[in-house]
Image 1 (cartoon, rainbow, N blue to C red):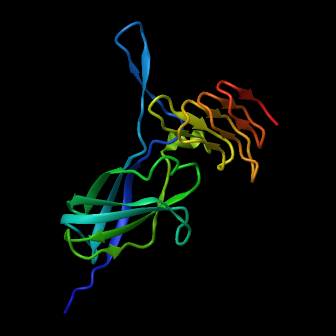
Image 2 (spheres, one colour):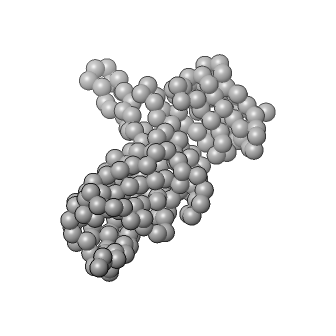
Image 3 (tube, rainbow, N blue to C red):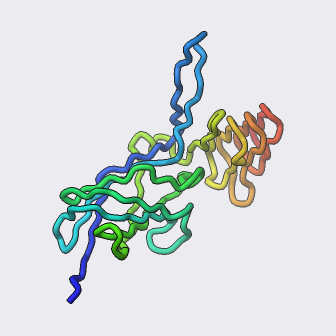
Length: 208
């Protein structure tokens, strides 16, 4: 007779780079500073139990990012990781759902586990809500879009948009509904308003 496994997962820590943090590396000559791209990956830690007891062993994990607690739309692609589980505790680094996955809107992780590694997956319910680091709450609705040259900063309406090929653009706020603010030129800035389009490098549109 097959033993039925029930799994419970609890969030222990979630290290998300949110807000507008930029890492700066001090140059070796003349005080020049070069931006260091932080990337979009984060680390997830949790606790895994089977029939109420902590799991020990090597397990496979699948992570999917969603915009709803039970239905909604998946964001990015499913991530598969193999991790050692000791006394129920595990760490899965380098979960990466791509640029723009976190735009200030709520997100949940759908997790499935295969223990031992290589066995069939069991879905964990419910989906796990992702919560921001406390200091990120000081800048709600503001996030960075990474670029090898210079990150872009996007604020205001969640639909405001900077083209992925653009570097160093800024949308300070504004935007609404179908009148989002968007930038398609590097180093252009939109200060606010709605329905504005920044396409001239270093152009500043305050409001419209």
